[in-house]
Every structure is written in structure tokens, then in C-alpha cells.
Amino acid sequence: MNKYRIGSITKDEINGYRVIIGADFVPTESNRELVTEGRIEELMGSELYSIVMAADYRIFNLEAPITDEKNKIKKEGSPNLKIYRESTNIFSKMYPMLLASANNHIRDYGEKGITDTIDILRSINIDYVGFGKKNEVKKIHYQQIGNVKIGVYAFAENEYSVATEYFGGANGFDECDTFDEIAEAAKSCAYLIVLFHGGCENYRYPSPNQMKICRKLVDKGADLVVCQHSHCIGTYESYGNGIIVYGQGNFLFDALDIEEWKSSVLLEVDFCEKSINFIPVCKIGNRVRLATNKEAEQISQCLLERCRECRNHDFVKTTWGRFAEKQQTTLLLRGVLGKTSPIIFALNKVMKGKLLNILVRKKHKRLLYNYLRGESIRERILYLLKEEEE
Image (cartoon, rainbow, N blue to C red):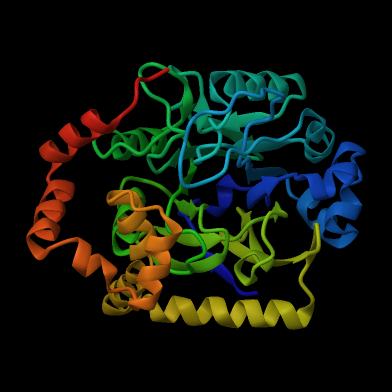
């Protein structure tokens, strides 16, 4: 695939060093034997493994804690994930690497899951960023790559996993602090990578607000912004002095067998060429492989077409609006009104999605809309709804 110029590093500052960035790396029961025995070339194929290991440094999203803890946190809307301890046999074979875990699952097994993960990664000298104990979640990882000092900052949208003043977890997005932290980090390195765990799952385009946030990150000093939450290949754009990638897809995560999960892209940041190379990858059963020429061409064409589409702000807004409308049953009937009965969903289907208009009057919709958009009202509602913190 084509390479795209990035950053503003001068030729004198670089020595041809490269970093590989991948999204969700989650060993599951389906490939447990391969992972436990460290059979990494079988897991990803010798050709892909050679490409990954040819880089000087590797960065992946660890989507769950590494722990034997049995006590799950209470949450709704998504499962509690964890990774078995023996997975370290596969991670240690990719040294040196950084596991970024600012995501919506890293705290699925509470404080014990967090501390177990930290202890395990430290024991095998694997770097981590984007999560930790309550006083270390905002820590930025700096790494010397040849003559270039890079920085990696990772944060997530605010869900069950984010750290609070009471407990550790993921580094959550804060409208007052995050942008200032990016600006400070940019002063301390030659090239700043920001990993943003946000966006809509199984949706290949950015939302208007996601695009606004990512562009502001570049304005504040990020050279590369990578969104990792959608589980599918999205799109990208050149903006200001940076590149924004809206969705890579999973790297290795054999949980669902749907179309969006069957392909992904690795990002190869080449400091000599001042470029990003998109490396197409395909899921084959419980493993991954470098895409064939035909598969890579199809992935490339679809990616480039979405890039062209997203240059039109009206397209981004309209397409996201249609996607949001399809989610009204889950988001409003279940999430806001608490209507979880199968009868309710069956009735809504029979009525072609019109049940909400009967259950919620226009006056109620206007009130709800105003509650959710008003900062001070929303703050009060969140306080009243939250359960006691651990």
C-alpha cells in the first residue's frame, strides 16, 4: 500500500528506524495452546512475524487484564474479559514492545486485575502505558528509537474501566486536562504518538465529535493519532502536521466471526522515510496472516474510498447519523428507559422501530436531550446514578 508523509523530523535526526503499531492483541481459549507454547510463527505466519519483528519496537493494545482473579466488576453492556498468565510466553517473544491498555476492559477484574497485569508485564520486561494504579495512569512512555525520542500517550473514552480518585484503571479522556497533557508531552520528544481508545464499535467512519477531538490532539502536538476501539478498519486523514487513523481493526482477537473482524492493518512508522505504511492483515480461523496481494488490494481500495468520502463533512455527519439511528433500540430503549424485556424488543421490531415514539413523548425527548447536553445537569445525573466506588 502507499506510504504517507508524517511528522516534521529532519533527515539529520534519523537513522532509518521503524515502529510497528497494532490494535487489539487478545489471546483467547481458541488459540491458547499456540500462545502458551509460544508458537508465534504458527499464530501469525512466518511472513507476518518477520515483518513485525523487523521493526525496532512494537506497540499493541492489550484489551484485557492478565490475571487469575475470579471476581469481576459489575458492568452492563459488554462482557468481562481477562487473559491467562501463560500468554506472557507469546508477548516475551516480541520484545522489545509496549502494551497500551487505556481501554474499556482493562479494569474488568478490578484492582487485583490491574496490579496482576503490572506485575506480570514487569516480570518479563514488557513496557506498558495508559493504565495503572490511580496515581500513575497519566504516565507517558518515552522510547529512544535510534536518534529519535518518541513519546506514547494513551487514553480511553469514559466507561467502567477508567481510573478515579479512588482506584486505578485506564487513563480516561478529560476535556480539561487531556489536551494540555498532549501539549506538554510534545515538548519532551521528537515524535508523539497518541492512542485513543474511542469511536463506535464495528463502524468504519469517525463520528463528528471523534474527528473534532482527534484534530485537536494534532493541534496540540500529536504527530500520529490512532483510534483503537472499532474492531474494524476505518479510515485516515492528513491533518495539519499529523496523521489520524480512525480504526485499525483487531490484530489478534478471536471472539467474533463477523465481516468487520476479518481484516486489519498494522501501521509501520518509518522515521527515515517520514512515512506510515499500512500493512494489511487477515484473520484466518483463530490465527492471523499477512494479506495476499488480492486481499491487500481490496483492503487498500476500500480504505482509500472511505478517505475520499470523509473529506466531506456533510458525509461524515449524515453517515454517522444513520448509524446512530440504527442504535436507538439499544441506546434508548435499553440504556435510557431500562426496557430490557424480549417482548419490548419484539414489539419494537413489529412496529418497525416506532415503539420509542409511543413510550417517550416529544416533551420527554426534549427534556432528556437538554439534560444530557447540559454539563451541570449531566454532572448531577451522573452523581445520582453512580454506584458506590470501590
